[in-house]
Image 1 (cartoon, rainbow, N blue to C red):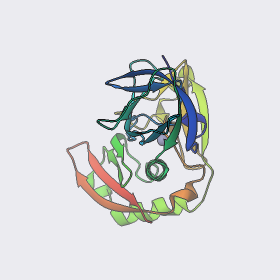
Image 2 (image 1 turned 180 degrees about the vertical axis):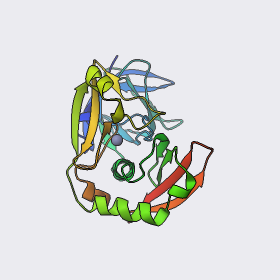
Image 3 (image 1 turned 120 degrees about the vertical axis):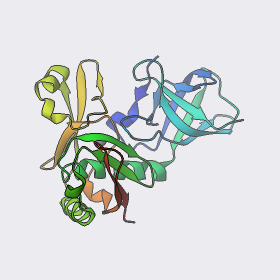
Image 4 (image 1 turned 60 degrees about the vertical axis):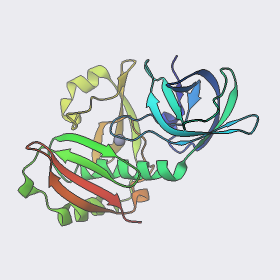
Length: 237
Ligand SMILES: [Zn+2]
C-alpha cells in the first residue's frame, strides 16, 4: 500500500486529514501524509494524530514502509492506537520540521561552497553536517561560513524539477552525494534547483526561499577518516 506523499508537493503543509489503512507494532499507515519519513540524511517527522474521539496519538518518528512510497508513523510507547478505516487529523511538529527544512536547504548551499565529493550527511533539528572527500587543509570554517552566508543572502527561490531516469543517467555530474542514491521511482527523479547555486537530486523538504535559512555558523570541522572530513553547521537564530 503506498501513501500519498503530500509533503512532496507542499513542504509547508502543517495539518491534513487522512484515513488509517493499517496498524501494527511497526507503525501506523495512512492513505496520505504530511510526515516525512527518515531518508536522504533528513530525520523523520514527529507530531500528532488526533482521533475523532479526541484522543491524541503522539508520533515520535516516521519511517519508510516496505513498499515504495509507504510510510510508517511510529507512535509513542503505551499510546492508544487507531483502528483501520478511521479518519484522523494530522498535525506536524512544525517547529522541528521547519528547522530541518532550513538546515537541509543550507546544506545544499554549503555543498556549492565546499567543492568536493560528498560522502555522507545528516540533518537533525539542531544541527546538520556534510562529509567531504577533501584534504583537511582546504577546509576553513570562517571562509565556509562567510561564503555560504553570502549565497544565502541572495534570497533566491528554490524550485522542484523532475527529470527522467535516462536524463539523470546522462548527467552523472548532478549526483554529488556518493553515499545516497538519488530518489528514483516511476521512471523519474526529483531535483532541487537553487538557481545560480545548486542543482541536484533530492527527495527531502526544502524552504521556498533560501533567505528563510537566515544565516549559518560552522560548529566544527573534524576528520572522520581519510575520505570523511565532517563539516557541522547550525542556524544562527
Ligand atoms: Zn535536499
